[in-house]
Image 1 (tube, each protein chain N blue to C red):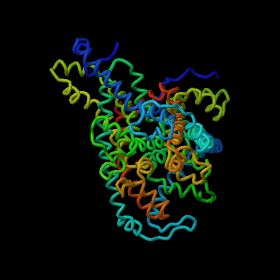
Image 2 (cartoon, rainbow over the protein chains, first blue to last red):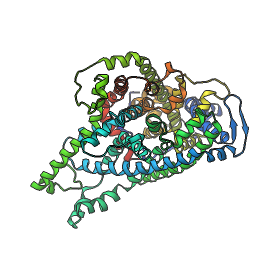
Image 3 (cartoon, chains in turn yellow, green):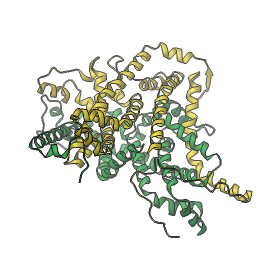
Image 4 (cartoon, rainbow over the protein chains, first blue to last red):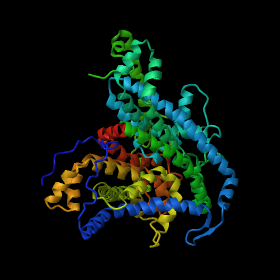
Length: 323
Length: 291
């Protein structure tokens, strides 16, 4: 047969959230079992490669993380059960507290900066009538620069000698800062890098959400005498509530796994001010060769993050049903 | 015809509204140029300064003398062709394997009614709840010593390729798209004598070009931008992708040379973005609002 007429070709598939095609044809009664078996074999032939990869690189490691967390494990020689010894050892590591404190602080600051800034930017951009394409491309440009390059670039900016960051402060007649080398400023400096590198995606998502707000709502609010800020407060924010919540969860999940910036820019320092949980996992595995400790930490991170992921999935699914 | 937004067109048409609008507009242009374009400019030109000019305070906005040697040195000294090639091989392999295996699996789950298909799909979707980075260490141990066959994929591009296939998000995207294709179309093909593979290849895939585009972009960008996983997999310097090599070499190399290497490392993805920007931006915007 000739190729059928083209399906609705929205660029990402309009499929997400669309109702599933009815699975009417179940098992055809009266089909000989030999034929059914052949059908199943064929279906599994298509499935096997993908499923095998999931088994090997998703399901098995997830189970293994839990198992090794209770073992003294050295690669090659199997594991030896040690109960909760890994957890207690990791727990008494002074870096443990620092890593969790830093990760949580990082997440909170990242939410404060990385949340308000893109929202306000998107609000403003949505009002502009000219050069829209320019703004969209420019704001997304940093996202396309490899994270390692962004990190190295900012490491150079933060350089106390020839760094651009201090040069800018001097230009504005402000006191210079130690940036990523200062005990108080290191973490904030890293948040700035992460925000700069990732905000483009958030802005674009907000822009799309803002464009779906019906104009009549603003019109009605204005007729009722609502000021600009009141319109933001009572129309824009309620209308984008879902997206705001969704992005907040996504951002928490992403920032709690931060690794590249501290690894590249500060190396965890000064002292232990920028060691994050993932960085500590990396250290346990590759510096201390303590895979039991690394897995114990991984399980803790996993439990915490899965809660946020579950909330996120639930949210997107329930919204999909509404649409 | 534009839809009404926060500020009404009427307010904008008034002289005061116009003045405010253009002030804000110029402010945003300036802000964007400073915040997003200037760092890129600084990087590209920084690599062309002489080694002592780049560390001079106050810095120069435009290089006094233009050197291309930063770029040529980076290319030779840091062995960039090798690392770029490694990255290309890793990204291309992950992309192709993902397209082949994820498409086949999604097609099976969507149209071939395998026994326990729902259980398998549920298991795949459950991995969306497990943040990837939290599992890197047990994943590393698995790759270092594959169960049953006891082979190591460390320092092997397969160590990047195969785990990349286990991408629940892309698989789900494909499956939902295939779900939309009417069964009649496939049944008609079958009556005409096409096998399952033939149907997938000549009917389903040509209809799925948009979603294949999205999956391709996601797959390529993910591998090109990744750092932690290749850092673990490739201890052998000659096999490292550019992201890992940059960090490893950044310690003892001249600043201008490092900056030049950073620029070179950014070019492929930035060029891809500029070429496909319409699709990428539309994809991010539309994909996310739909959840």
